[in-house]
Image 1 (cartoon, rainbow, N blue to C red):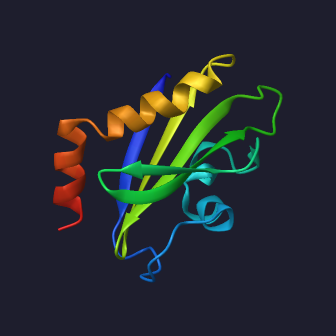
Image 2: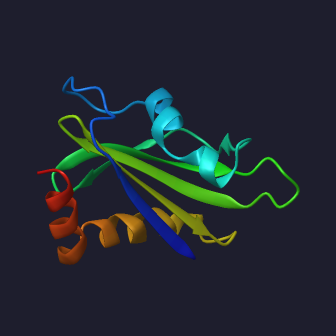
Length: 117
């Protein structure tokens, strides 16, 4: 993993209970900040961050670099948190568990809970 970017989108999520689906993750997951023409590398997976439910999905830039990044979106009521991690080719299987562990670390959980008060 090279970098992880995390940002809140307070009041951005639909307030209905339930999980984020692939379509919503594509819409809110900040992929356009990394690469406007990014293409999903497969279906999303369910994640849990500090008791908040969400989805993660790997995207590939549609340019000659074919660089990849992981997008994770999770929510608490109407507040959405998005994390995007860039990573080098070849270590895709290790990226999601490492990013989820980082987001579930004590320091990040305290920050995330403060954001969603």
